[in-house]
Amino acid sequence: MKNMRKNLIAVLAIALPFQAASLNLLKANDDFKDKQYDLAFQEYKQGAQVGNSHAYYQLGVMYSKGLGVEPDLVNSILYFSLAAEQNYSQANEILDLMLSNLDTNQLTEVHALLDEFKQNQDVFTQQFMPEIIEENLAHKVTFDGKPELEKKFFIDLDEEELGISPYGGSGNSVGEGGVESFGGIIISKPALLIVETDVASDGSKRNIQKLQKHGLTRGYLDKYKLFPTAKPQFKGKPVDFVTRSYMGVAADDAFAFVDQQPRLYGDIRKIVRAAEKSDTLEEKYQHAIAMTMFPWLEKQPNQAENLMKNLALRGHPAAMYEYGFMLYTKQKDIPEAVKWITEASKYGLARAEYRLGKLLTSSPWVQSDEKKALFWFESAMEKGHDAATLYAAKIKLTSQDPTLKDVAGAIEYLALAEKPQRLNPEYFHLLALSYKDRPARDFKLVIDNLERAIWMGNQANWDTSEWQDLLSQFTTGKVTIADS
View 1 (tube, rainbow, N blue to C red):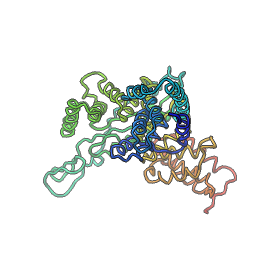
View 2 (cartoon, helix red, strand yellow):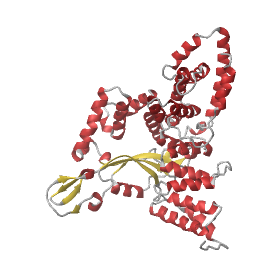
View 3 (spheres, helix red, strand yellow):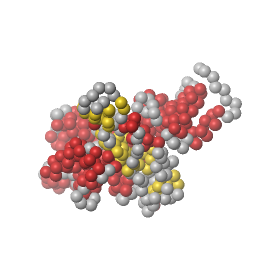
View 4 (tube, rainbow, N blue to C red):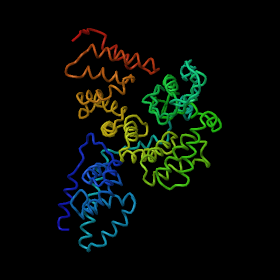
């Protein structure tokens, strides 16, 4: 115990640089189970830097038992104390037992070190955490004057889009995607599609992520993209939002669902029955997800929300995100919503990290902070989240903060995003800006890519007036465009 302060200084010196560090505590848990303690230790350290209670607890265990690191009683006490502050698992009981073995002088020194450690940890953690704009909590986002967006989309598709086309041959068979061949005619049963969508201030749908699909959904998605939603506004000004939308049989009631997709309905009922008999977090989560997607499964009001909250409290990262997302989109309790999305992000859940980055750049209730947003976007990007890659590039290209401006880094990110984002107008807008700002400027490619972004945006019913103004600036006056 003589080296307590020396050890504390060593702990505080191990600070995570404010740059891309792909948080992944789910992988850390797998590494820990596989006894890959060195890997798990480094991943838990990253989780601890952003204030994750599970990472605190695991580091306390590892320092206590010397797993992947030299045994260190001081560090073990420090991390168990941080976990205990968040009432994580048995941290309080373990900490009390460890402190009970110290004498009075040691206790006095330990408590002094704990206070200093916690203060330093809090200061560091706040570099990543969102700040709520308290005065805005009294106001809500409206959608062309209405309190919420329509979530169900009933889209009529013609026979070709449904996959109905003449085929030679005869006989009956069932092929991929629920497509049934009957007497030489291909007949697609109604498909199911559930998506999470960023809603821009002009009402256009962007960064659409498929959450659940069954059958042939391309026709649904193609038409869904073309129809803007009501425009979100906050205190009379345009603002971004997020929503989930249900198409095909996902928009139907239970009776229509059973009629159109009896096999899928049976599979869903099996999940629900298994979850009702089980107490494992994952099966309970599957039950909650099923009720979230198909409200007609609920036996009690708000059953899905209540179960998701319970699972979040029990430490299920995906449930943390889902519960936070529910609260946010319902505008029910914004601070609680942001808290749970943040908690899920601390585990390294890519979709939560992306959403937190978006909140930090476009939410009317969260203080805008590109530096924090870039950290979360880059962490999601490291796990292959395409939209996060694009937004990280956008910050590096357009930020007014000189410490974040990084054209070379943006070009690298755009190269990663090229294939998955080739149908996204925003990609070509950013590519145009990169050709304007890179050392080997190519003004022809600036114009070509900007014109392509505008054309694609118009096709998708985006408001491209800002890009058109930019194009006008680039092409008005004494401008010479030549091939390089």
